Length: 173
Image (cartoon, rainbow, N blue to C red; front, side, top):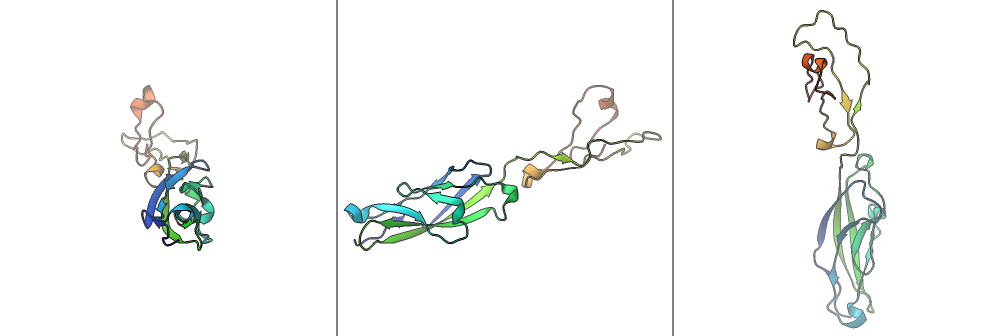
C-alpha cells in the first residue's frame, strides 16, 4: 500500500435551498487511489470536528453527501457550513486523504408578509386629493429580496379603486 487516496479537488463548494427534506443530495466527492486490489479501494467518512458535521452524512462508498436535517434559513445561526471528508483505502497501513466542503444554505420565499393590523379606521372628513389617509405596514421574515413587501389593493375595480391609490413600496394610501 504505497499511495493514499487523492480527491479530485481539495475544496468543494455546494449550495442547498432551505426546506429540503432530510436525505437530500448536496454534492458528490470523489477520491482515487492508484494502488491495486484492496489497497486501492476507497471509502469515505466525515471527520468529526464537533462543529458542522452533525448536519450532514457521507455515503461510505459513493461519496454522496446528504443532509441529515431540514434547514430553516431564518432560524440558522449561520448559513454556511464547513465539513471535512476523509477518503481512506483498505490497505495496511490505511492511507488517507481529505477535502474540505463548504455548504451554503439559501433562503426560499416561504414566509407570508404579516400586516401589523388587519383593520384600519380612517377619518374621511376634510381630505384633499393626494392626502395620506393611512399607511399599511407589514413584515416578512424571509431574507433579502424574498423579504421585500409590496402593497396593492385586492381589487382594482369599483368606485373605491377610482378614489384611492396605494404606494406599492411604502403602503401609503
